[in-house]
Length: 311
Image (cartoon, rainbow, N blue to C red; front, side, top):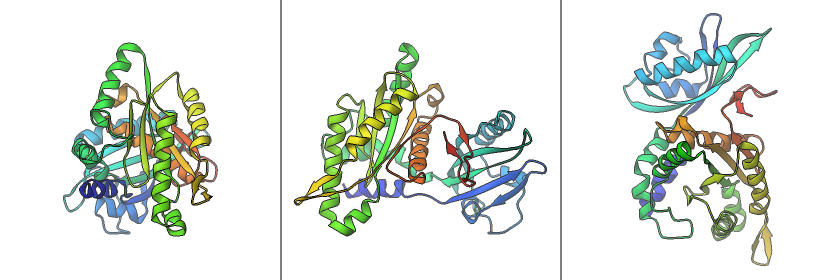
């Protein structure tokens, strides 16, 4: 159990994260310190796009270049998990998020964030063993790892037209609840949220706690993003109700991120988790205690220059 908790905690701890931009009139790069650290470059050193590309593994480089060209042409950003090697030769997974800025109808720069997600990728490799080592609860894994379930659902979706979604959610600022009310109160909040999830989603295809305060759901959809958003917002109002504790009540917030499963996830099921996790990040960045759905359209919003926000 302690091994599983350590693995989850490590994987769910945000990796090195930084912002970047590339001016398209000369490929001039600007990085924050986090991106320098991710690639293992000396902070503030002169940047060259050609040198940077040499640190991508071949397949990731080809895929990124194709998506970059399409983004500049269409104006639609993208999310991609890339394999890179840092300057010291370490193999890493990097989550690349890209937005496009236009001036007078012409793309002038691309920008976004780059994050080290190596630990998260490693979690997917060890998930079956870690899940089976945890105590049996109402939120136990349903007979197989979540990744295997995603692969199965991709096949079902292709053959039957069924649609599915992955939802990641957490209790906002659980550490503050622990500090104010005690660790037992925080555990009570988690147990209550577990029970509420089980009641609200009895037909979930997968339902598991994946971190200290994070839960994951695999759901069958009645339709597209709009019905999913309506269903999650309705559930959110019930999940975020105050939790009774020792004669009073603890106010909680719940942030939720979701992504729809599609054919593109067949070769890389982890990308579905990455997209749901990105939507959860957006929900937190937008003020927490809300629902966001990743729809593949990553574009800059007014007042937000750093990480592009999915609509």
